[in-house]
Image (cartoon, rainbow, N blue to C red; front, side, top):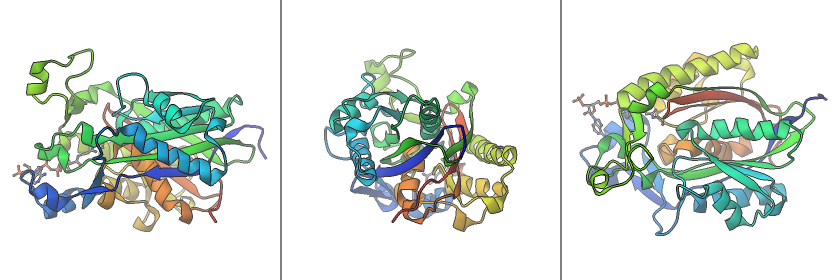
Length: 333
Ligand code: UT7
């Protein structure tokens, strides 16, 4: 028992759209090939939300409903819902607002948090703080992106990487030491030139010129981001372990952002972890930005055991990066 209130993850939900975009499909769209994509990134296929009129909130809604069913609660028991995303349905209102409406979470307030690929980690830290304050008993934290909405499918530097998906976790108070144990979150705006969308914000509002110049799509200087990502994700994960006296043998799972298999391998090596302890699904979903980490938790939930130490780690646009130590709170039947 501990006097401190801990924010335990008590349920997980996820959603990926049914349509697949394979490397072979991409070979027909841009100058690339399956072997290059697999060896440079680890990706074989990604999911794309193709249905007209559907947006990020439409992927989050089923993920949240799934976690409610698993936990045996109704959506109107949710008090706050936070969405990490860079592909909100609209500039405003927030996607969190729209999700609450779609699922019938009538008692909840919520907000969107923009931290690119670190969006879920930043949102998780925020949700945990609400629970730890003692004022909230049920907070839902989502990571979701419809990256296909902001990808230029004539640009081989970006279109081979990204996919669509959504994941969500429920946070509840625990007097036992389970849940979010510690976090280290970082950001550095000097990294913005390497990964951003040039137009559509207040700096460069949409115009005929910005559309003609394809400036509403994600722009990435892959090599530069790669170098920062390898160092940032590995450093912060190692630092978090050191700070908390965690050795490699204490860690059950590394839950890394799925940007590139080579970045994941470098982080695992730095932490002294073998591949069996690393959640990897990049080959099937690609980089779903804020959704990668909760989608891993969703897929691996059955393998997780009460008391398992997890390190969640991410690096993304901003730059933003960080790591969170989670002690898993339940066994799945
Ligand atoms: O999600 C959060 C943030 N994002 C990341 O963490 C992504 C970080 N970056 C990366 O994952 C990698 O930089 C990429 C996967 C984007 C690119 O891989 P790379 O190993 O850095 O490739 P590169 O850009 O250095 O290009 C190497 C070669 C070049 O040809 P030359 O100059 O060696 O002849 C490129 O023109 O590969 C060529 N190339 C391609 N070839 C086939 C670049 N893109 C492609 C492509 N297909 N799609």
